[in-house]
Structure formats: C-alpha cells, structure tokens
Length: 183
Image (cartoon, rainbow, N blue to C red; front, side):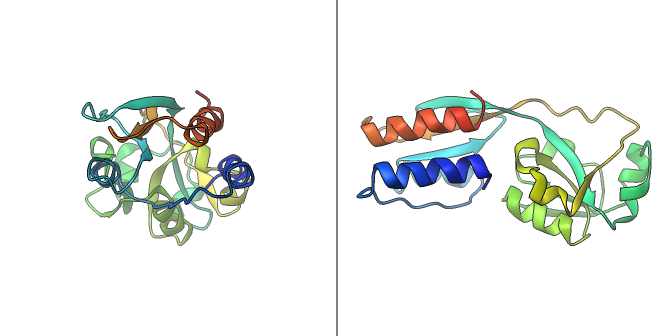
C-alpha cells in the first residue's frame, strides 16, 4: 500500500474506531464477486472494463510503467526493443492480457506480488506508477524502451454493493480515496 493510502486508513481508524475493516488483495473479478455475493461492501479495482452490474465511482487514473530489478540484465540496457524485451520472462497481472510480449511468463493477480517478483530478478513487469514510490525504486529501475509501450490510463474504480447505503464512514473513505488516487 502506498504511504498516502496508509495515512488515509490511519485517519479512518481514528475517526471511526468501531468500524470493522477487512483488507484483501484480489484481482478485479474476485473483488466484484465478493461485492456481488455480499462478502464486501466496497472494493478498489484497477480495471479496463467496468462492472456495469455494480454501482461505481472513478477515483482516478493510472499509467503502467515497465520496471525490472536493478541487477537484471535489462536494467543496464538502453533503447530496449520489443524483440529484446520478449527474450526475458514477463511478469504480468491478470488484467494485462493485451500487454503480453514474452513467451516466458509468470502471471499474478496482485500488483504487489509482481513488484516482489521483479525485485527478485525473475523478470520485468508493468506496474501502476503510483506503486513506484521511493522505497520500491531502491530495488527497481524503469526500463529504457525503444518503442512506445503506451498503456491506457487505467481507471481506478471504487465498486459498491447494491445493498450499500452511504454512511459518514463510507463517504469519508470514498472522498479520501479520490484524493489518494488523484480523482
């Protein structure tokens, strides 16, 4: 979690000490399923496709950035071609099927898992720019690509349950999340 998100959650805990909170890291499909099944009231998704059956609010947008461990062979290369990139293992998120460039792949449902795997030098990956704070960048470097791997601005969306009734706590959290994600 980013520092800004941790600060928001600490403020939430102080302001609403009697509210129970469960934080789970899951892919977009699992988040939508939990909300639909009544196992969660709200969830945050990095997604390309909206879940039209659930009420939602866009919190902001995020670009994906190509990164690799500092000691990975790609880390010191300049103007890396798509062909060269394809020679190395690609770590990719379930939501990034349009950006698979390598036949050697590891798939994850968590951007944090991708980050940890990249730090171990297993391969390169695309991570949301917001995750790349100073702490992560101690172990990762941005790839110098010779081609445009422009990813769309991924909408960061807050999904709600149909049974969700706005409360002061959820309003505080939703507004804080908009600030965290730049919406």
